[in-house]
Length: 622
Image (tube, rainbow, N blue to C red; front, side, top):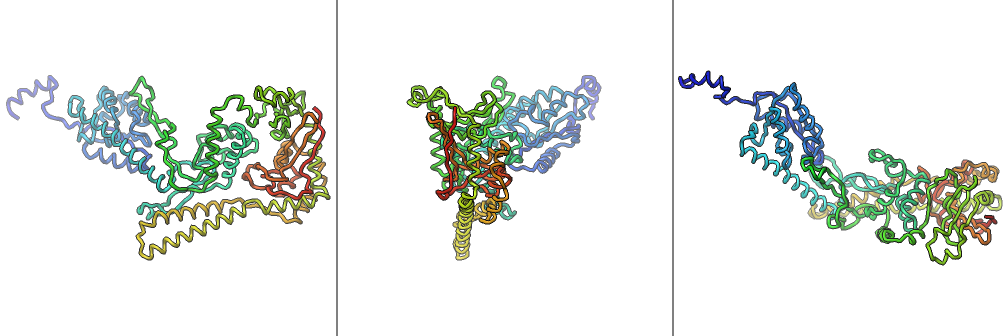
C-alpha cells in the first residue's frame, strides 16, 4: 500500500468512506419466484430451475424462499400470497435476510410493478438482485431503472403474445376439428377419451383427445326442458316442475365438478343457461365467455386488475364447420327456442299473462292435482289455494288480458274443490284393474314395454359403430396402399371419435326391466283390493301415481262437470324419478307394484285398445 493510501486510511475510517468495493452478495438473501398453472407448468420443476438460476450469480446464502403458485404475473405483489408475506416480513428486523434475489425478472414483475415495489423494499434497507441485470439493482443508476422498466414492458408484451397465439390456435382447432377445449362438460354430456392425440409426442405417451358424449341419464332432461319451453312454459315454471319431480340439478348431479355451487335445486337461471347453450346442437362452440381484466379500483391503478368473465362479442365466437359431438336437440329446435326467447323479451305484461302458469306452493298445503286442472272457459291452469282448511283450484278473471273476449265471458272466480275429485278419480283408476278391464290394461303395459325407444336407440348406435369401423378400415387400407398418412389423418381421427362416442353412449343406455303377460297378471292380482289401497295411499305417493298416468282435469263451470283423462290414450310428455330418465316408459312393476304408491315414469307412449277406459266425467259443485 502506498504512503498516500496509508495517510488516508485513518481518515477514511473516521469518515466512513469505502475505498474498496465490498461484494455485497456475501449477505444472507431470500429467494422469490412465481409460476402459473395455466400452461400446465410443474410447480416443483419451475421452483427448482428458478432457484438454480438465482444461485448462479450470487455467492451469498439463500436462507428463505417465497414462491407463488397459480398466480398471474399481472397480479400486484400485495395480492399474491407469498409476495405479500415477503412484503410483510420486511417490517421484522429479525427476518434473517438483508437482500432479495429473483428467479427470473419477467416472472416476478409485470408492467410498472417494479417501480412500485422497489422503493418500499429499499426503504427497509433491503437490496434487490435481478438475473437480467447480472447483479444488484442500483436505484441511483439510471440505466438500471430504464432496464427494469423495459423488463416490465417485455413481460407484459410476452404475456399478451402468448394469450393471442393460444387463442388463435384454439379457435383454429374448434373451427376445423371441432375439438373440445376442456372445462366442465355441459349438463347432458360426458367427457370421454377419444382418438389418439394428433401431436405425435403426446400420442407416443398414450394421450388421447377428450370428446363429448351423451349422458343417457341427463340428456332426456335437456330435451324435456326444450319441449316445455316451446310449449309455453317459462324458465321458473320449468325449474319448479323439475324440482317437484325431484330431478337433481346440474350441480347435484355432478357435485365433484361443481364444488362452488350448493346443489340445492333448479333455478330459473339454470334453465335459461341450458336453453341458450348452442352446444346442444352437436356443434362445437368456443369463446361465448371470455376473461377480461378490469381495474380493482379505478381511482387506484396500483391496486391492480381482477379477472371477470364477460359475454364475448359475436365476432369472437367460433363455431365448428361440421358436427363435433352427438346432438341432444336439433338446430331447428334450438333456433325456434332462441327466437321465442327474443320474442318474449319484448313481450308486454298482457302477452305474458297468456303463458302457462306454475306458481310455487306458498300456503303449505298439499295439492294432489297441482298443475293438472284446467279451466274450460279460458284454457289456463287453475291455481291451487287453501280456503278454510280445504284445497281448491281457482281461476280468476282479473289475471286475464284486459279487454280480451274471454274476460267478458269468464266468471270473476271459478272454484273447484279437490275433495270432490279425488274419490271419483281413485275409483276410476281402480276400474282399470278390474277383471273386465284387466286384459286391456295388461296388453297396454306389455305393448308399452316393446316401444320404449331404448331398443331402437341401441340399434342405431350399433349401426353408427359399424359404419365408423368401416370408415377406419378404409382409411387404414388406403395408408397401406401408399396414400400419404397426413392426407387421411383428419378423417381417421374423426371416425375414431365417432366410434368412441357411440360406444360410450351405448354402454350408458339404461337397462329396462320387461315383464311377461303372466308376470304382470300375477303382480296385479297380488295387490288385492286396489280401491282400498288407493283410499289409504299417502298424498305424496298419490301425486306420483297421478303423474305417471298424466291425469288431466278440465272443469266446465257452467255444467259443474269435470272431465278427467289419462295419457294412456296417447303420448305423454313424461316425468322422472331420481334414478330414471325422462321419456323412459314406466316399468309395469313401478306402476302396479308397491301398492300403487310408487308409480313414476314417462307414461305409456303408444295408443291402447279403444275399449280401455281413458276418460270419464264427474259432477262437481263449486
